[in-house]
Length: 437
Image (cartoon, rainbow, N blue to C red; front, side):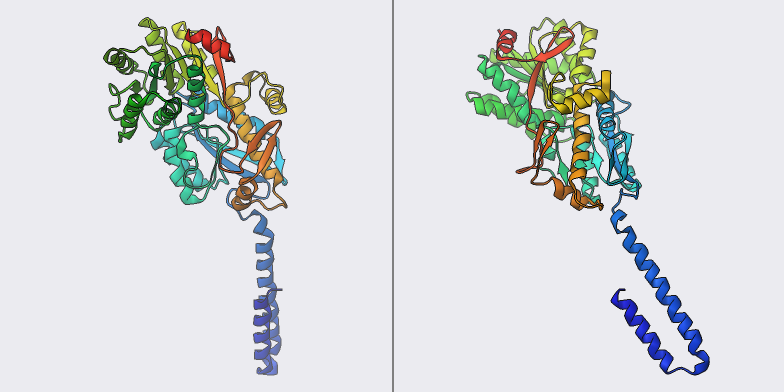
C-alpha cells in the first residue's frame, strides 16, 4: 500500500486515542471507509496504466489517416487506404485489434489541417499513410504539437527527412527517385542540357526540382541550368510565377491546364538552342497525363519520367484517353509486383486483383506498423515505446529490408519501370538506350 495511505491511517488513529469512547467506533468506521476507498482508486489507476496512452484501449489500437478519397487524386488515397487496411485487417497485437479512421482532404492543405485536428481530437495513437507533400506540410505541425507520430506518409519530400516531430518514413526520397532516372539517362548518353521538367507548382513539385538539381550537380557540366533551378526554387508564396525561367514548366495544383508549362519548355528550347529529350514530371497523375497528352498532340516525341507518387496504374489509365502507351518511365519505391518476396506474395493474397504499386506501398506501411508493435516487449503500448522500437533498428519485412540505423527512412529502394502497351516493365540499360535514341 502506498505510503500516503499509511500516513492517513496513522493520523486517524492518533485522533482516536484522544477521542471519547462514544465517538471511537464511528471514527474507526470512517478510517476504514477512507482507506478502502483510496485503495480502490489507486488499484483502478494501476490497472489502467497499460491503456493510459491516447489511442490505446483495452481492445483497440486507434490510428488515423488523412488522404484524398474524393478529389482528383483519389486513386492514390484510396490505394494507400486499401493497402494499409489489407495489412491490418484481422490482426491483433497484445490482445488489441486495429481501428483505422480515415478522413478525406481532396488533396487540399486547408482541408488536411482541419481533418488532422479532427483526428487529434478523437484521440488517435499515430497518423498513418497520409498522402501528399503540401498536405503533409499542413498536418505535420498539428501532429508535432499533439505529440503524435507520423508513420509511412506517401511522399518522398525532404519536408519529412528528417522533418519536425516524430516522423517515420518507409519510402525512398524524391531526390533518390529523380537521381536514379536522370543518372541512367546520362549514362545512356543524354546531355544534361537535354533534361527538362514539368512539375506541380508547390512544395511537392519543388522537391522534384531539388532532385533534378542534385542529379545535374552530380553529373556536372550544367552550371547555368542549375542556377536557373535555384532561382525557381527560391520563389515563395502560393503559386508563384515559375514558368519562363529555366528548363521547367509548372502547373497549379488540382488543375489540368498544361499550355503555360508546355510553352515554358518550348521557350527554353528556342532561347538556348537545345531540345528537351527527357522531361522529368512531378505531379498528380491526372495533371501529368493531360500534359503528356497535350505535348503529344503538339507533335513532341519527348520521353517522360514520373516519380512514384504519380501512381503508375492511375497514370496509365489516364493516358489511355490520349492514346499514349509508350515513352513513359515511372520510378517505384516498392518491389516489382511480380516479385517472389514473401511481403509481395502476402500482399497479393490479401489484395487480389487490387494489387498495384500504390496498394503495395500501403500494405508495406501497414505491415511495418504491425511489425514494430509486435517487437515491443510486454503488454503496454505507448508512443514513446513505439518510437524506441523503431529508431536505430533494422527489420526484415517479408524479405524487404528496412534500416532505421542512421535516419528516419527505412528503405532506399528505387526501381525504374517503363510503359509498354498496357504494362509497366522493369527498365534495363538497353531499354533506356532504346527510349532515348
